Length: 131
Length: 472
Image (cartoon, rainbow over all chains, first blue to last red; front, top):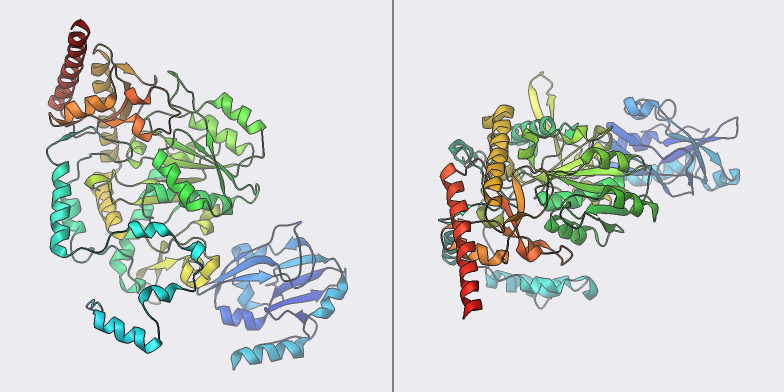
């Protein structure tokens, strides 16, 4: 059973989004996603300054057995990418909701977050995938 | 596991079972406009006997000539050990095994191959090989477009001095992938045979900066491009540099990693000079090497060296998560394999020759080519097609159509070279009189002497018959 914290929102494609105090939104992939992928060996990040829409490809996460696209959970501009993942992509496995974050967005409209799933709804998505 | 083909009866039963009229109807879901009618030209299968007879007949056509042909395929000496070892049962497969890690010997060989190609080209990484030089260039072009994040142009400039077959193959492969191929012009006349730097700047002023440029060194005409200036020109506008090189020439020329201030970004070419017989033009193997930063855009596979839980060395497929069987339509390329058998030959060739052997072979090729060219230029009416330095291949301008010379010399057992007109789209002036001559380390003094004697005689006979006609 994977961990699904309450303080963030989720996309059905397994990205999480967390509103920070400064109004930016941090994005990563869920514990469930990192478990399904296995050992992450490389993360391809979006370019700084890129403006993306929700559901748009924002990068690729590559594990020993698969390479999957990462989609932007909300609209916004990429203002920071996690430099740590270049040298230590395994951080995604070790701490998916903390040190293993992918990028930060300057959201275009905070109400986009309301469209995402809460922890309970996301847990149902994960459950339905497991059964 | 034996390979047992279906009988017609088997096929009929299976089709009846699923209620389909014939094999072709299985493909009905593919829209008609996407199917290629050209497949009609692929002949039906042949029996083993008919095939052997057909191939023996073809092989016969190659026998008995002294070879001065080049244009991408060269008549180098192949040490006997190369094919003796390559055709051993342990190596004799044209394919990467599906259960790759069970074939440690094959993986180690590919790992050694990659290491040697990296040493030869000066680049950071090599893939496990692709089909041939021409398809290698097409893959390199697609790779450059993917890799160039600074300049997202889909425009690629290919030098007019790149082998025309490479350019055509590349066009065929990339034409439906939003890549725009344009030609980089060369000097037209005597000083030509290489790219015109001033025309480059004029061309660059128009339109957006290209995503990549393709430069061949030595180029199709055997000539030396100003690769330093070209690479710097490209990098100044965030254009990636794709180098097409003859691996044998790297025995004497500086590696593409040292072109200009930053070096080439992607290097590709054909491995035929390394242990692969000319065999009427194929097959051979292609190589692609690149800088480390573009590693994840390399098509095909890379073999890595690692350790198992007990600390023993093992070899493994790496970076395959981006191949087609996992990424489907989003795969890096549709190359999922390598050219196993011919790479085995190439790797054994490089092992036997070593850096010193390759260097000495390259030097010998160059010296013999210069010697033959100097001798031929003393013949009345024979001129350089282009002036300037070359590696082991040069173009001559003959006083009569080159095809006549080829016919006359073949009757005497010499393949004197390629007719330039066969490789020209009509833009090269006097191509009809152009002959492209390649000389390898295999050509003896006696053979060079014989070439000079024969060409002299053919031209004299032609001149005298013209005189007789004029006089009658």
